[in-house]
Image 1 (tube, rainbow, N blue to C red):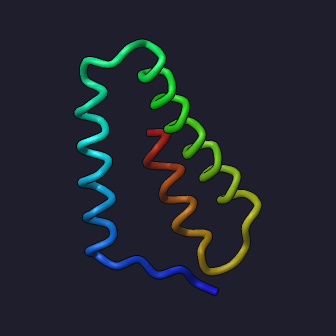
Image 2: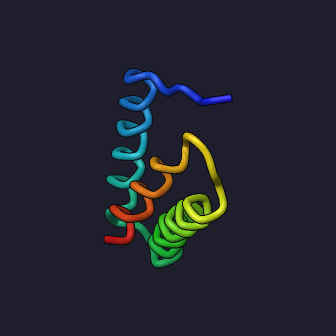
Length: 70
């Protein structure tokens, strides 16, 4: 089953993440470390997903992994 995302949902996600990262501007070292580790976890998951998954969703995993690591 393919998951579909709407433009409205993705815009809300970007807005929420933008406010979250703006709040981290004066954050402690712990919050900064947690946000970096979350980004690395997402990139490692995308890389693993690009290697392991076969099928129609594979190109999106590869694109996320390539542009994320670059």
